[in-house]
Length: 458
Length: 89
Image (cartoon, rainbow over all chains, first blue to last red; front, side):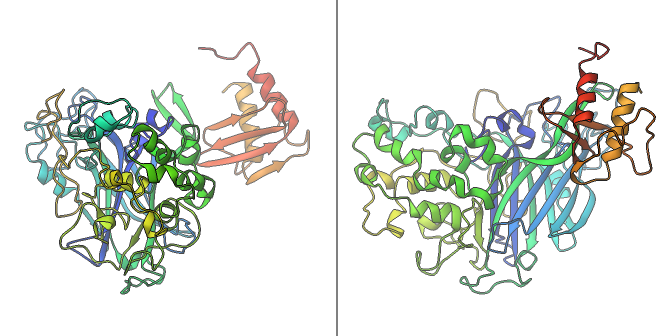
């Protein structure tokens, strides 16, 4: 998946597991950027009585690099605290929750937001309320209202933290069954009948942190860039989760407590990098590494294992890809440096020569009036890999890029195989619909409304 | 507080103000009668000896980490950890 359970250690620690990052210029406020970090993957909406929540013992962060050095020049930190209002009940709520301050909600969660820039730390807010999870029509009868109440305005920014519907779509069952793509089943080394893809993530929720920030707050010179070619136009974005170095069970408090400095246990920039490019034995270390130190992983981007596997798994379908022996400069640019000027006419999101996995967003590219979910490869420069919008089909984009479709951008002598432009897992976006307003991800599916064993989303 | 944990806390307090690796003069700070001084740690402390053959002990305090290089201190922690009076689950 994008980064759900993508490494051995973090797969055992879902509360700290970054699942997706989105960064795009707000369609409704084009002088603002929306940054979204999702955590806590694959939440079954009916997972009570202890429903999903952020970790009080985790520091969640969204980082922005604007210096061309792939360093965290600006970070937004989020810390959570959970309260129990009535210690004598086992219930998450003791009646309908009609507002986010409703006393019927027994386990409210709050958070602080701190902006860190260099040595300066500034707490923007101290105790903002999350919404409850979507329990069902009796407990959370007007979930849209609860969600709206949890959008907080703090100075010039808006912020939200709480449960949302996952927007990512992918056929996990097929992809991790020896790299199978159901629409190409008949061409697979171990053939099966061709069929449509199955969206494994449909109907699952995540916990999302979203922030809408004025563009000028994120640039090096404090101004909104006007030109796509401006050196201040592109930022690099990634998210992390940190835990304290020591975690000990406190047998008096009956909970774990942390001690010591914060250590990064999860990070995410471009979708699928740690998932499918980094070897299993190095995934945990990758999660603990800062992007500026990614040069040691560049070899896995330049010679991706998956690009070598495709011709083996689909005999005869990728002959040109099989013969290509040079390092993949296209993938290196897309994932590690940004696309320099002159590669795609009228576009660049280059952040400098430091090889680093960051989601790069050229903020001078206006939102598209007619978004193409294939983003830049579909001719829409407002989409992935120029940032990432909610509906961008990153699985298809990256699959086709690895299959060689983007290689002619940097090596015109290469002719992509026909199968490269057909490569897809066959899923469509059947997740809860994204919303046009902040925080943009769809409302989470409700527990009562869920039918286990199906992929029905509601 | 047991005598063993009291001495560990005092030992940490002696190093608590320092940042990064600190080399202490052997036998200087950890006499049995050593008392907590102003500025010593007043919260939970975790001591970590990664390698019993080394002279390094790491203390985790709040959101900080203090590394102390003191073979005598390490030996006393190891002796305490190996004592039969330790709680075992």
